[in-house]
Image (spheres, rainbow, N blue to C red):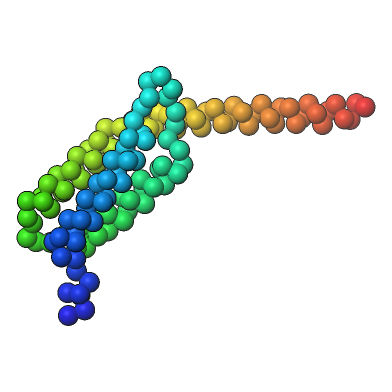
Length: 125
């Protein structure tokens, strides 16, 4: 009986999935490559996306109703499309993150060199 109370109704499940799709679209729009000013995805955006995927994956595995009306099937189809869109963008996201990592490593090396130079300058004074 307790398990039945925890199960979502089809309408609740459909609404949850609709909200999830809305949040996923927002994240995917933030991941869309800007050809004029390409930027790496922000840590916040990646975190939001990951949280949404983990959360939705958990309740999809646990609470997916056996009977699925038209609206639920439509939301499930959109969810699948969002995941496919994310999968298509993963190589570009990976490239951006690798480029950002290289930039940060180069900046760290530059700063370390400047620190060594400053310390050497102090010793000669």
